[in-house]
Picture 1: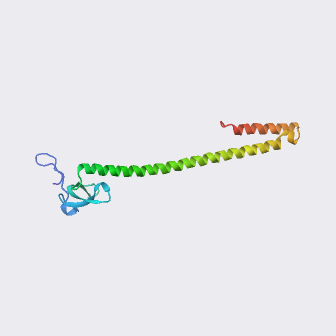
Picture 2: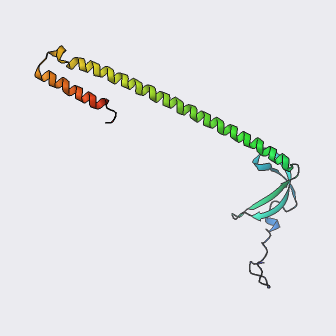
Picture 3: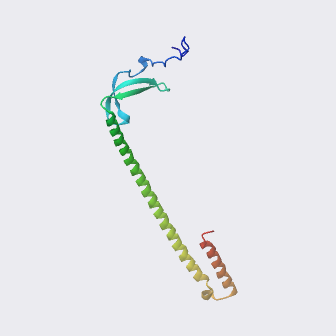
Length: 155
């Protein structure tokens, strides 16, 4: 029983957990949550094994749930999970759409402000308004070149 091979060389049978350490014994009637649901249902302990962390794993057979009922409960649980996932997805999508609209509006406003500032500065520098000299023409041409570079999306 110490894990060593038996006299005939066969591997030893898995050790049965110590009954005094277990909360429940094989064959005992217990109440447990079926697949983590809220309601507790009667079940019979079929197997008890160690979980590798110093605790026990209990394999249960539920008495009041037939195979068809288990599938129906699984469908209800799946519908509940799908509904929650759909609500989360819808909320995230709604937030994303709102952020994209806000970004687009901000971009349009910045473009309008830049165009307004360009027109104002072009009027301030235009040779017809400030007097046409070689210096004012060169300054206005430099302004037009700089504006064209700023407007070009490839830069």
